Length: 185
Image (cartoon, rainbow, N blue to C red):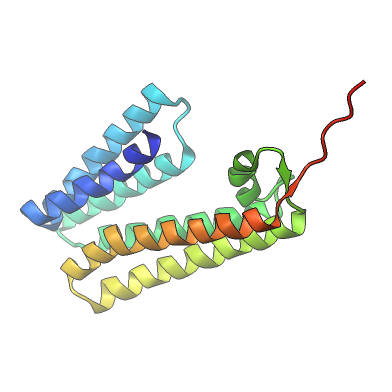
């Protein structure tokens, strides 16, 4: 259910774009992010930080887009968000006991363990991915039509992220070792 909620604002954005254009889509996205945070608050508590950061960016840049009637502000949102994630992954390699990749993915491994060097390599791959994806968003926004950018943002970046995450999960799974069982007394 949580995964479906995360994609709801993107779906609302693209449907609103098809029906009413970029400014209607921007307003719809702003409302959809508010609804996502409300759903998070009611269903998961606390609100995930990534959702909160994304919502704040959508509201600030979306308001600038609507007030100034300049689509460039909303086009910057994916880049700023992805670069913020890249910086978060980078900082986590030096701050705290575990890199962000490990904090996010370790629970999915269960009893399996992975050496710190592998976690740092995985963390670095996410830094590079988010930096490149943010740059790609800007390139598409500046060099292609608005309609192409919308498709790239909603479909292209989403698929790229899912494929990258799947590849990382498979890569990580091949490097995980099953922890030895605890001795019983």
